Length: 170
Ligand SMILES: [Zn+2]
Image (cartoon, rainbow, N blue to C red; front, side, top):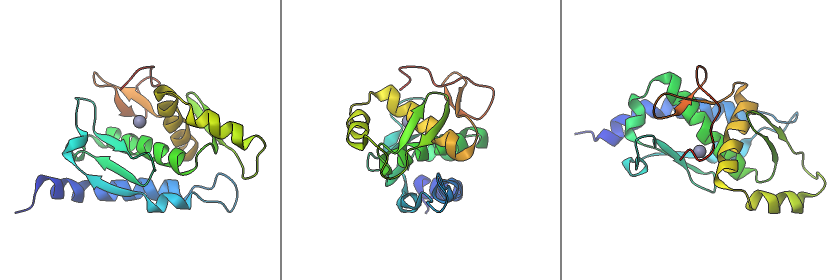
C-alpha cells in the first residue's frame, strides 16, 4: 500500500524538478549558473502544514525544500509560483548576500568580489522575516521573469490576479 506521502511525492517531484532546473540553469552573469541549487532536495512531509496557508518551507541552508502532501492537490497556478518562492529562498540561502533585494521587483545579482561584502553579509544576517520573504520573491522574479503575487483568502502564491506580498504574512 502506497502512503499519501508517496503519492504526493510522485505528483510533486516533476514540478519541483522543473522549477529547480530553471533556477539552477539561470545565469545571473554569463557563465555563472546557480549550480548550488542542483543540490536542493525535495521532502514531502505533512509536518510543514501547521496552518491553513502553509504548504511549504525551505531549510535555512537552502538544501531542502519541504512540501506538504496536500500541495499535490493545489492548482498548478498556485503550486508552480509556490515552488518558485521556495527556490527563491534556496537561492538566497545558498548565495548569501549575493542578491540586492528590490521589493516587488527583480533582485539584482551582486558579482563576486563586489565592494563592501562584509557589510552586505552583516546586513543580510540582520534581516527581519519580511525582508527574507520579499527577498525570496524578488530573486524568484529575477529568475523566472514574472512577479510572485498572493491570491485568495489564504494569500497563496500566484503569477497573476493577486497582490504583492504584504508585511507580516506568515
Ligand atoms: Zn517564504
